[in-house]
Image 1 (cartoon, helix red, strand yellow):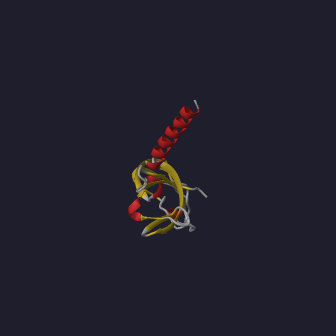
Image 2 (cartoon, helix red, strand yellow):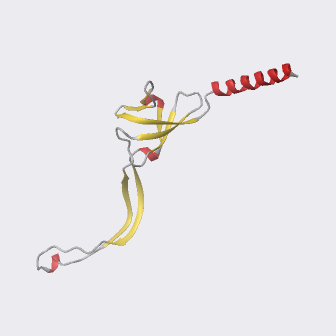
Image 3 (cartoon, one colour):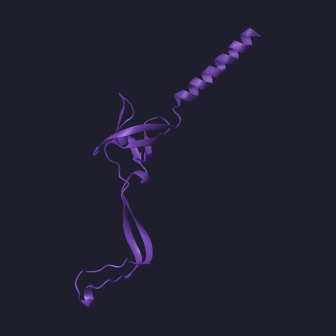
Length: 128
């Protein structure tokens, strides 16, 4: 019986070692050291270079088209002329807006290490 349990334990260890050797996707944390070129430090010994990093929209600047339909707040010009009196106006239509999500030096990032460990997908950054 003891020999059988040793065999089972050995088989379990072989399976675990095999799975771990495959480097399945895992969550990894790092700090942006440089934006151009992009470099992310994972620990004291490992700095990832740009060719190993992929970015999601959550960590880049990008434009979006939005539809707006509202009235601006009242503004006054400060003289007594009618053209400068308090007024507002419509603000309508499809407008482009720039979303400022780009990485900066020192950002703490969350990444997924892709199967095999050669590529890392930066999925988000820590909100301060």
